[in-house]
Amino acid sequence: MSLSSGLCTTGWMAMVLVRYAEEKTGLTWFSISRTLEDITARLIETRSSTLWYTSQISDEAKNIFSKLSLKAPGKVLEVDSNV
Image (cartoon, rainbow, N blue to C red; front, side, top):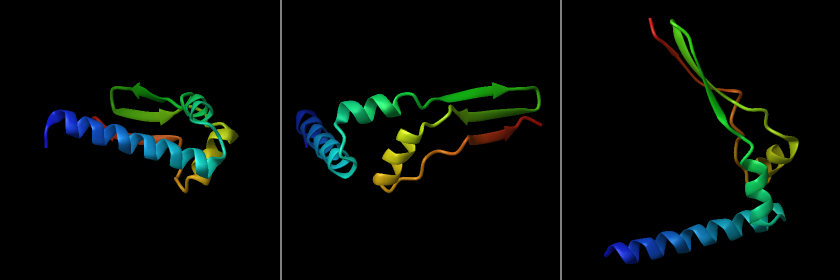
């Protein structure tokens, strides 16, 4: 498989996934991406631990996850002890 063939396949698959998300949610891709782009991960580091956590997830974003049968990320993503 050549590089251009792989990129073409990847682009096609991305378009299929976008269309699937639009069909399942009843929203445009623009609306889906604008809603989900507000979800961020933040890092807190102390001497003894590192914590990754998510921003507040809106009800609209939770609804999108639900319609796509996906689990929304939890508040705490990862905790590592530096001890």
